[in-house]
Image 1 (cartoon, one colour):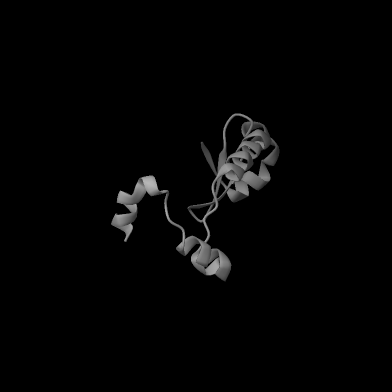
Image 2 (tube, rainbow, N blue to C red):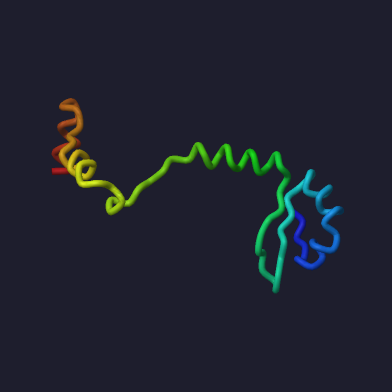
Length: 87
């Protein structure tokens, strides 16, 4: 991955627009990476993978009916040994 200062990136955007087709570019300001420049293909792939990720919700974000339904759920009887452990 190429690392480039923000001022250099801005000054030579056309050059980096071509470079990004081969590899991502990390843009730095004050010796820290502030962003990444990636190709349209890489960004689309990132969006596709992000959409596939499961979503986790904090209990506080769930409505009362959902919390009650989850708290009263039990596993199938064939898993009684596991239910006993959760007891």
